[in-house]
Every structure is written in C-alpha cells, then in structure tokens.
Length: 286
Length: 141
Image (cartoon, rainbow over the protein chains, first blue to last red):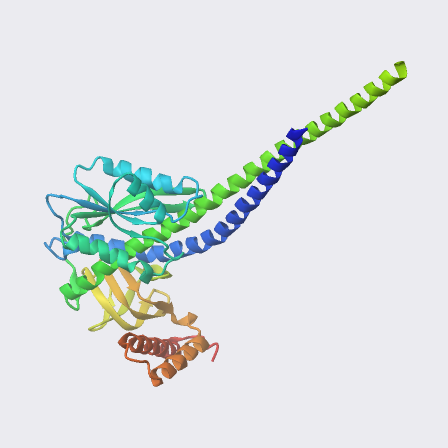
C-alpha cells in the first residue's frame, strides 16, 4: 500500500524538523540568558540617567540645551523601530511593527523611520514608509560603542531641525514569557506629565554649559542602548518560546502519525492474511 | 534625617542606602553632602567616595562620572565604581603592570591608544592606593 510508505516519509520529515527546532531552542536559550544579563545589568544606570535628564528638562531655565527644548509646531517626527534580523521568533517582529504603526497612525505629521533589524526594515519598506536609515547585524549583546552611531544620527536629525521629535519603539523584556512593545519619546526630553517646573534650580560644577553638553547627548545615547538591549533579550526569549512550542507540536504530530502508521500496517497484514486464507479455502473446496 | 545615597556604575548597583553624609570627589575639590543640600549637578574626578552612616564609614573608588544631588537624595552615575573592600589587589596590580608596559612601548600615532593606557594606569593606581589606605581587612596582601 502506498500510503504506509508516504506515512513513513512524513514521520521522518517531521522528526528532522523537530531536531532543527530543538537546536534553535537550545541556541536561543543560551543567547537569551546573556542578553537578559546585559539588559538587567545596565538598567539601574540608564534609569538614573533618565531621571537626571527629566530633572534637567524640568529646570525653569529656558533653552538649557537643544535636546531639551520643545518645538512648536512639530512638522515631522522620526521613529527608531527596533526589531530582529531574523524571523522564527513567534510574533516578536510583527508585534512591534503593528504596535508602532498603530501608535503613529493618529499622527497628522509625516513620520520617518530608522530601522534596527532587517525584519523591521523589510516590513516598513513593504508598507512604503519613509526610511531614514537602517542598522542591522548588530552583535548580540552589542557594546555601547556598537550602537552609539544610531544615537548620533538621531540627535543630528533633531538638532538640524529635519525632525522635531524623536521616538523609540522597542520591546521591553519583562519575563521569559512576557515581552511588551513600547513607544517612548526621547527627544526633546520633557518633564513627565503631572509635574510642573521644578522650583529648585541646579547648581552646576564645573560650568553648566560644559556639563550639560557633556551629559545630555551621552545619557540620551544610553537610553537608546538600553532599548536595544531590552529588545534583543525579548527577541531571543520570543524565539526560544516559539521554538519550544514548535518542538512540542512536532512531537505530538509524530506520535499521532506513528499511531496511524501502525494501524495502517496492521490493516495491511490482516488483509494479506485474509487473502491467503480465502485462497486456501477456495482451493480446498475445488 | 538621613539622605538616600545610590551609587551605580554602568553595569550594576554598587551601593544604595540611607546615610548621614556623602563625601564626593568633585572636579573642583572634595565636597561633603548632607541632607537638605541644594540641588547640584557635578562632574566627578578620579577618587574616593566616602559614605557615612550612623554606624560606619564605607569607601568606594570612582573613576569619573557625574553626581546629582537633590535635598533628599544623592545619585552617583559612575563610569566605574567599586567598594574598596571588594578590590582584587592582585588583579589591580597586574593591570597596573600591563598598563605600564603598554606605555613603555611605542603605541603608534593613534592618540586614543595612549590615552586609554594612561587611563588604565590611573585607574589601577587609584584602586591600589585606596585599598591600601581605606581597607579594614588586609586580605590578599
């Protein structure tokens, strides 16, 4: 019977597939561990740096630094969207894209994108979005130097007034099973809603301009770095979970197919025996 | 009333706690921060941060960074920081020798390499010196 042969082939192919998904799961498991450590290690620093930026933006002094100064009206915004270079990560890439597009759908001004990750670039290009730049094949985890040019590019666009606001769309790593797409405005830095101007004015040492020129760009770059680290941890976690599910499904499928195959084989043997017995009986009777 | 003190380096939280006073190595000299200090933003020099609580004093080496002072809080964002009790003397000594050797060689025309080596030397000297001066337990020597 041809169907048992086909079934054997099918079982073998599913088995091969499950080996591939299991290997990918193992690789992602080790990568997620490293990415997660990198993300968690730099988090305290970047959170404190963020607080300093917010405090600076709250100073009642006008025009402290271009990166802290609001513009009216906003004519164009730039979005740094962080995705992965590769697929097979469950809904990771699609989720960040969908969330980002939805977030900016309500914007009435043109939105230009800077893509981190090839998947994101492809998806944005397919939807004919304006792309300012693309960064892919980042090391995992990247060093601060590896991503500093991304920050430089965005700050350039902002300072040269080609864009009036800059956002980062990234995936926050919560747990292995939970990652959350988020959009965050990084330029200009603003006081958080609900806070008025701070009445306490900073004293600066050595000199305010020098100090602010030094830390504002660097702390902004650190926020971008953190978003990339968090996204990478999310990507590896999403891939690991997706691959584990795929392996589980493959195992279930193999079991089912094996059962069917065994039944079909039994049936074939029974039929053969019936034929022989039937033939023998016929001969005895004649 | 104590003041909250947090020291973070780029890869971890080095110290957090409620303290009586913090001594910071600012670029323009040491400064003591007590509770209710006026808001201040300052660049830090290579040096030692002293954290004084009611019970004891702790010392931390810091290799540059910035500090933000609010009336109820001191936040140190250090480029690198370490509790003097945690300094690995052997490693610091090895790093110092390595940096000294590097500086003896011809590093080529790239000024960055020279600066990196000098910074490494300064850092290891700072760690060795502070460990010698501030350490209570003289292990590893």
